[in-house]
Length: 157
Length: 105
Image 1 (cartoon, each protein chain N blue to C red):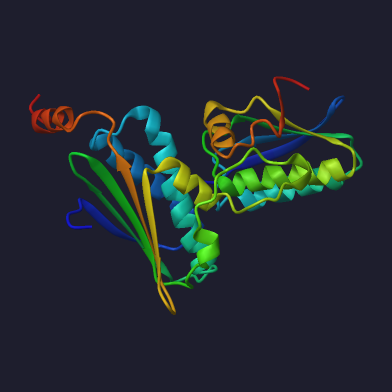
Image 2 (image 1 turned 90 degrees about the vertical axis):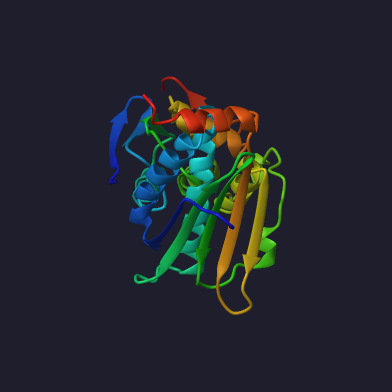
């Protein structure tokens, strides 16, 4: 990400997910993401962090993940990076969430489809021996001018 | 954030009342409660999700496990009055039609 507003290192501990959600919600409200999309964005970022904690680090207590948040006039970009075990390419494929077959339900495997479902662009990069990076982009629905206007008048009252 | 879970026996079946956020941190506790309830000899297991302001896919997975466990025993697995936030996650995961969602038992 060329320019970002926040980059934080977070302990890869499930307890931290509550804190991550608060941070992401606060940030996307600040940069003017419509309220009806906020819940979904918070969920998808939580899923990306949970994947790093659960699958990449497999519960290593001293591991860290990195969360980066940035926004421009047209796009909000959020990145989650870890130094853990690379995910399999198969697990990161974009698969449509079909109406499930009740006789053939399986728990789990929902995180990645949810991330694809929420964000407009999703890019996974996996290292050869270690590391995962997911970059998630949300295209703004409201015109950039409205956001810039809002941004430039903030803090004046 | 800890989650509070209590299981009550009612005329309609076992009701698991969940209060708090269900995420990767707290879902093991819900998994335990659901597994305990579904292995007990009851026909219906209900999970009251009205006081759950947030649920992620690990929480949804515990519900899918509960549904599978009860259907193997020909029992019913019911979600009681899910909060708006929980309903949104179920819809996003396309699982809202799979569960038996009710206002009361």
